[in-house]
Image (cartoon, rainbow, N blue to C red; front, side, top):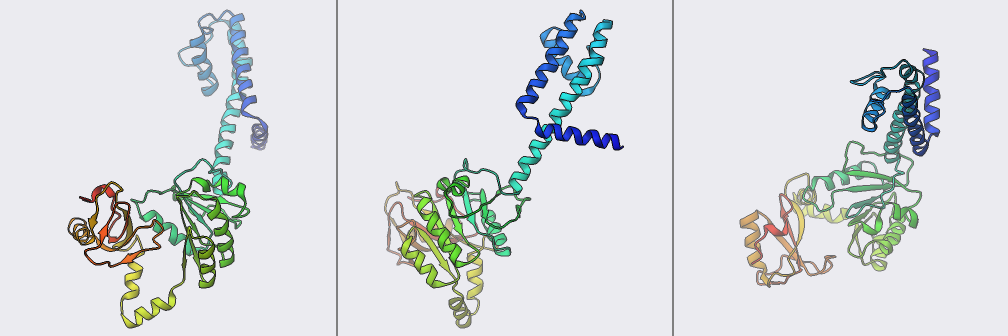
Length: 350
């Protein structure tokens, strides 16, 4: 048992230091040496190129013979003393190297060291806040019709992947949220959506300032603050970032004056509970429409309720509950409540 353990450890150390290039050289030496010895032994059938490739693979992987075997005494000695021992060494090294490579690849993803610069159209989530971040991830994944389902969670804490059971969630551990090389590694320039929810408002502010300058022009950036003053500061310096802050006072007053108001807010913002608030863009090619007509179409055909309209992608000029005669041009954005997200092709825009 001790000898087996010793041999196992020795093989592990050898394969850990062995590169794939060197392993290929060993394989060629084993195959070339075996073929040459069989030629010298007079094994004509086994040395046919197509036959030898098959025969050699069977011998070194099963330590036995299939439908081919040496027929001469010299051939048997060549197989016993060279082909099988050397083949076992090469085959064992290959299995060990492959296992180490796969384990290293998995660990790389679990430890957050993987390179995601090749990703595009993904959602970046900066910051880890325990249960709150878990809730954010669940809400994002629940929106199955969303156009960007791959989520890349970026953290600075010393931790491993918190969601290994969710294949749509990738993980990256960064030294800094503002380092250009780190941001390139997570594919910031090609991300579709970016959410910043730092450990505190200071981290959220500095991170948002760095990201707003390097993100794609059409990417949507959001940041969450506890203090309204920090939120206003970012709003002034980075108009391309949608800033949110705590509205506890407003929610409490609405709940006090209009019981049930907080439950409505909880439901329309959650993709896990009942109808949810969504946005859809009117096709650029669509002719001018009337808001009242769209209100009827959404309700009658899709059981959806229109809430407002905006001409800007950022929603800065949103108008809630406009009059029925309001004209809606192509390219406008409609906000609605519906059990599931609607696609533009589902709507009758004529």
